[in-house]
Length: 306
Image (tube, one colour):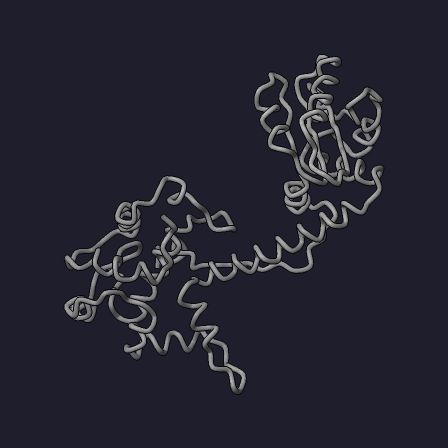
């Protein structure tokens, strides 16, 4: 099932604490993951920042909002317990708890008003309310980041498809060097186009010492690249007694081409236009940084000796 949003988690989190005992946050996360029958992949899915599991983050925000409403308390770091107010709410047997439920408590309204920027005149706030019902702040940041990134990748691919074949080959070398292959840019540049063998556009070192080499085919292509082109490349590799190759295209590969590389002994990596765009962004090829935002949290260790 999909990972539940933080408001869906509010009632289950409060119920975990209904026994009046102190509960360790990490234990509650595991308990709730089991309750929602999350798969291993869902439990380990990370935020785009990569510094915290998504599910843990959403449970954390559910706990935080319940605490702001006075339904939970934190007796010590990493633990939570229910309050009398929380027990009273559970006694009403609610079908769900969300931010609208919490808005009946003055402490929560004060907390939410502190978080909200002032609205322009005439703004109903409906769009903000809808967004809040689905997303934690990290979710909203991640969503905005993904939209910006997808747009950038698409724009990059459009430009790449309009570039000349020689520029595309240069781009491929720049990417591989930025990924750590080929030693330095000058050595890699000499390698490209060096072979002249049918089906091979260039050779690049796999590591800075040149202990192994990778053969490259770079095609700025319009239609999907089919199995015959991959077979031609594989044959050229065999002629060189090569074990590794990378076939990069600005378009895509047919299913037959992808199946073929999975069946042969030679290791060939296929990089289509979509993946090429992602790698260019990841390794700063053809892009520049225009802004940087740091997301910070309280350093609990700093306060341990207080």
